[in-house]
Image (cartoon, rainbow, N blue to C red; front, side):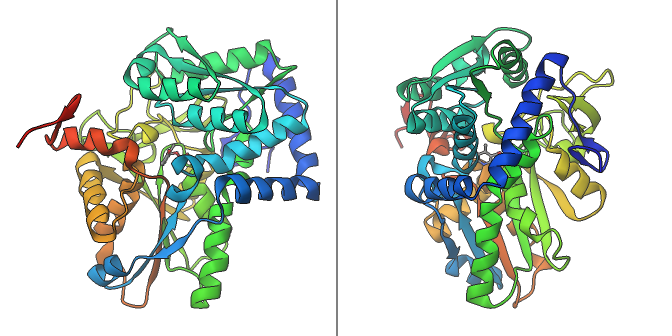
Length: 398
Ligand SMILES: *Cc1c(COP(=O)(O)O)cnc(C)c1O
């Protein structure tokens, strides 16, 4: 296989000025991989700071309602409330090892920016986050959160002033200041070696699921279900099971207002092959290859593409990618809250929705694991508004 390829996908589509930085990163990462001290330090960060291992929770009432066993992998219980911390702590540790004093990141909704700012604060690094001006306006609370954590947030005004423009700016900034700067990518996307690095930092999710189901149930799960934006929590969940052909790998894509509309973010269900953000993969784009504006009720899922390894797993039929609409996700958000007392992130609610949609495909003895990628506190206000229960700025009187 060619470097960083997953079937025809992946690769390194980067400007000449970035090739040096990518090579330096890959060399440092290979050295870190073969250094037990790096693995031990990363593990310590996960345990002492992120709060791992996360619970693999037997959802009894949900299981009884559906007629088979459902386990929830509780990434929502991590410090900062989602799986993103697993990856940013790993990359920040790599940055320290490389002698870089400054982290940069792009962010759309702000979640990856907040996670990166957190890791920078934890390790005493400086942090600059690039964010579209339009996104900064929509997500002002996360802008303040990043500033609170000591990061500087830079408004990007090019193009549509959203995530794809912020991504281009972060890449430009990296090529300007490679010497002291580490570019932290937030999902299994971007030029090689990022998709591999991020997957390897997130595989702790699947590794824990694997050892715990073997220990508690003496077998592997029947199926794993996770949501995909760029695909890091799903890749982390699936990766240790790829060779176990008996384990179904199922991912939910954000279908927004529906696959028959243009307002969705379901790359595999509705996209085509292209090159963007340094990689070949499947993207939502127009006939000229211009990246399309994407939409989902979930800010964490509206990335216009998907990681190259997912595109490959889809091509070879190893994993399934199915669309879930806003309405279905909101129903699942409410359902899980009520039946288990767990308010999931609206991203994660897409995975729960898929569990509910596919329930007739499972039998009594099946063991299905759903990754709850994050907690829903951040979404309560927006869902309340979606249901007409809250007005912008406060509770509606009865
Ligand atoms: C960012 C985010 C996602 C989407 O990112 P992936 O890389 O696809 O995992 C999903 N859930 C939550 C809670 C997130 O914050």
